[in-house]
Length: 128
Image 1 (cartoon, helix red, strand yellow):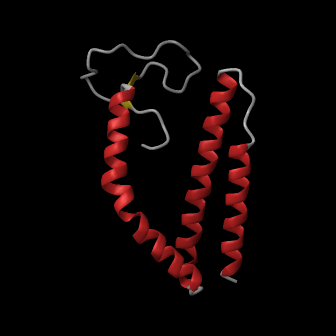
Image 2 (cartoon, helix red, strand yellow; image 1 turned 90 degrees about the vertical axis):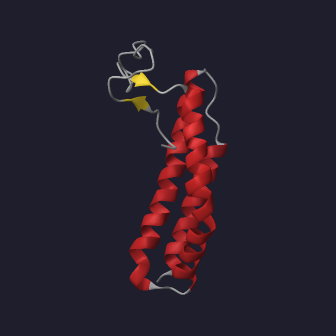
């Protein structure tokens, strides 16, 4: 939900027309959720699910890594993979947006991604 355009499935399409502007667009022919509704759903999910568990998950992950709990290596690897994937999606989104509007691609997001990758490698090395 936090990374893709949402679209309506079913007979009720809120009186909207399908997206027919660009045949090469991945949502071509689908009924896109209005941006305001999508933002409200994302806000509700973030405030009720992600933020309440954020500190708890980070504390458990930190405990795994500091105490070098090798049986938990897959949880650590998966968590780092999700972080890196989220970073990659964010930088790709920013790149596409810059290209779409004719702007130069910012190196800031790329530098942030590289820094995150280095941190992840350092964390994985701690498990050795």
